[in-house]
Length: 151
Picture 1: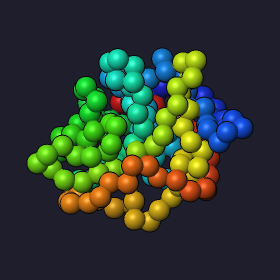
Picture 2: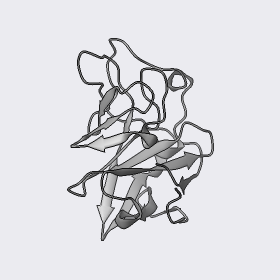
Picture 3: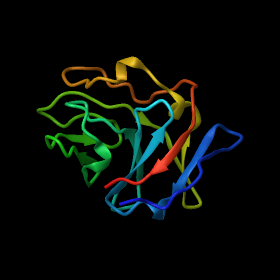
């Protein structure tokens, strides 16, 4: 199912408009495609809180944007690992994490940091399960992004 399309555009402070909050269903997600790959999943909780994570489960790399959102967690569609939306950490007894991205919601519009969306690191291309220190955010300059639909 595809979400309404939008054209992400940066503002003067380095944020990129992704979509309106109502473009993401409650307890749903949308995938933000990045030019260099490693897409970002943007999640909406039942109470309209918005979170963004790398769209990759730390276990086997499953697409978190296709998972089930509940409370402030998402269950990976591949092996049901649950990942915290606020910190990207896998719930015990599983261990691992996926990077988070800063989110801003202004007047019903969702914004992500342009420098974080542009980030690309080789070490993020493989699953990172197991004991690991979770980096709370990613950041560095590199390329554009666009919103695409997700389950």
